Length: 232
Ligand code: CTP
Ligand code: MG
Image (tube, rainbow, N blue to C red; front, side, top):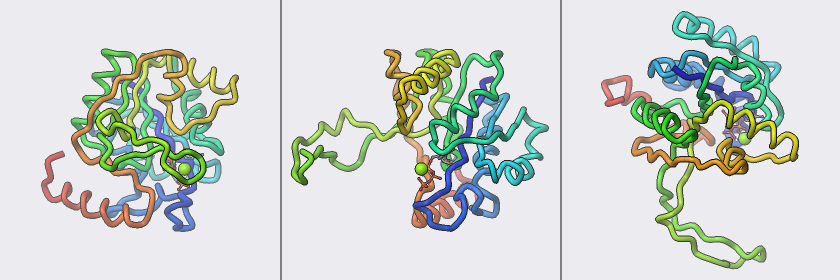
């Protein structure tokens, strides 16, 4: 089994609910409960560290208390940037874990098959990220509102979480980013900076990231489909 860091310390500004989106209900439970439940149900994770905003540590600890019979589940306080929250989570994972997954609390519907696939790739290659082919044609601008280039769609990927790494690579990547003052939106970018190759694990399943209110409507449909005998 491996360890997981679950960043949940955002504020959900784009959701505009006046509250951290991972504490909102989805299909009858909070998003953070669904996400942790999904990780534990895969039986791939022996320790899960949820990173909460300082003011939400107590509430999340209470919500997640029941899961501690299945695995070590801890809640720690995070930081103002996602990257710093992940670093706080890493500090709460012991040296005995060889691999660490980072999985956004805001992706509660990741499939069991996708979890298994990205963990297997990380064990083989040292680092792996779930990803889907981009659907839109992506263009690059020239900085003045005009198109500079049209990118080759077949080589572009929309990257998701989990992202799974050798623990030593991930710790070193965060340490170096801290030293160099680099702040990015995904952990793989920090591991790439060290020169390690990161495997792309193609995810054929939905892995919706809850970001705006319309995502909630779609997520309710997907979650209820699963509850009534879906294939995950
Ligand atoms: N996150 C975190 N610490 C932060 C910012 C984000 O742990 N300082 C977490 C979020 O809780 C979320 C994940 O990182 O589970 C992905 O971030 P995002 O979807 O951007 O969530 P928010 O930052 O909460 O949303 P928004 O950007 O709309 O405010
Ligand atoms: Mg954010």
